[in-house]
Amino acid sequence: MTERVPVLKIGDVLLVSIQVDLEDQTVLDLQDDLAARIVATGASGVVIDITAVEIVDSFVGRMLATTAAISRMLDAETVVVGMRPAVAITLVELGLSLGGVRTALTLEKGLDMLARPDSRPPAKP
Amino acid sequence: MTERVPVLKIGDVLLVSIQVDLEDQTVLDLQDDLAARIVATGASGVVIDITAVEIVDSFVGRMLATTAAISRMLDAETVVVGMRPAVAITLVELGLSLGGVRTALTLEKGLDMLARPDSRPPAKP
Image 1 (tube, each protein chain N blue to C red):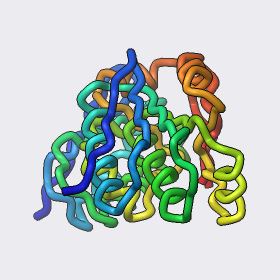
Image 2: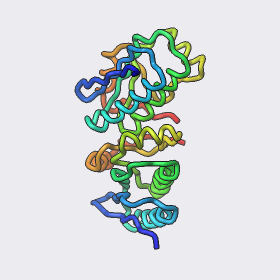
Image 3: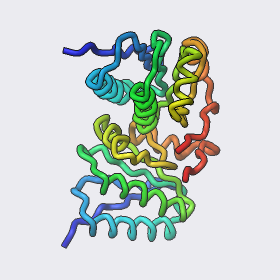
Image 4: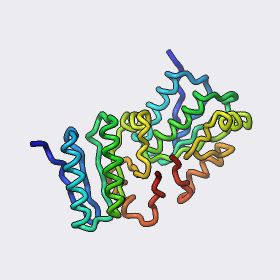
């Protein structure tokens, strides 16, 4: 059985902290869980904390983009926080610039970002 | 004879609630009816309620995008409400991220969204 990534609720925001190695099934479970929680709670924002992610590949990059797209469909904005310098470089090198996904350096800044109204950027294709 | 999807008027907004299986002719009829009603009523917004839609395929996804595009042409903004978690995931997997269509979890939130001025996002290509 694969591990599940917990989805925590902080006020109006859902927090997903990636602490485990992501396998295909873990990601699918996470996207199912997150989509269900957004609908159940009416959350307006999602923070994905990747502080613990040291190495990123195209699979993880696509996971971030897809998860953000699903959340956007359900009217919740996604902020990715805790990105390491090497991860940022790899994502750009992979051509995955996470269009439409906002980032913040820390969890605190990410929560602040979601709390501010009218700060929503234009979604990119 | 195919079923028709009713178009209801709530104040300045037209409400389309998808309760039947969508076939080609049903969708064409709906788009004709909706376009005619937008022009006749001068409605500024359209809410498409897909709460009853449990399974979505690329045909339904394209229908939502096309209907929103037609409404936008006639200066009415579209909000899709009642999207189930599985539907959001499928639409993203199909690569149909409904560019330019806003979503809200509930009919109430969708109507609120249309009532707020200056909340219109930039249309995506």
